[in-house]
Image (tube, rainbow, N blue to C red):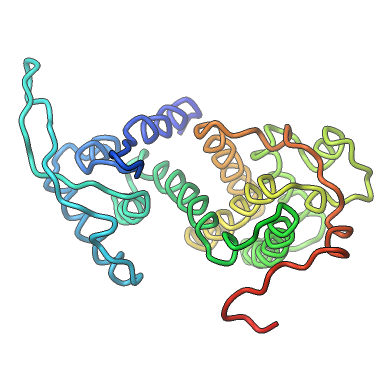
Length: 283
């Protein structure tokens, strides 16, 4: 799949996103079906049915994410007519692309797009994260999450065949190159003006940490979900996920990670700030 197709497809998902009168975003089922290359809407209804089931199994009210309504569609010669359709939340779209035909190129792109976008939405809505009031608290929370998920990513990479420390360093650089527009760890150090001894993650603000957290979680899931084996395939996977996270940041008008400011060392922040207690966790 070429980069041009990937960019065009992800742009389509943004172009068909709509907003209702109170500011809630949604996608319509018929427009999404077309974007995902479903020519017969009856086949797409089966995918929606699976998404409803997955929504119920996740404990989410289906009515909050998949709502019946009548949609205007073109029938030729400039004419339109009302047909039955659905309004879909971002989460519903995520469930739909996870259950759609994986043989369609745009479905694979949709899986990455909506997975990343859903992660963005989830982290902003997570109770423990939304309760944090300062940038320092958010940094501490995300840095802790990054450390935890890097451990899980290392485990997934090892299962894929990335065994030796030097191979893991190369694997990590591929993720950085995808997310940072070709910059590896050394290049990021240079761009940010960091010393060799300074850890990149320790000098990121919350926005940059979040982008790297998405990179790590999505790569781990993809390595395991697709049973990827071999160092080269693992490296390519990390690069592709990083690049798609970067493309998503671009699509929503965000700042590229290499252009984000350098933060004070997280070690200093840890010395003077403690994150608020999270419900359900021991102190």
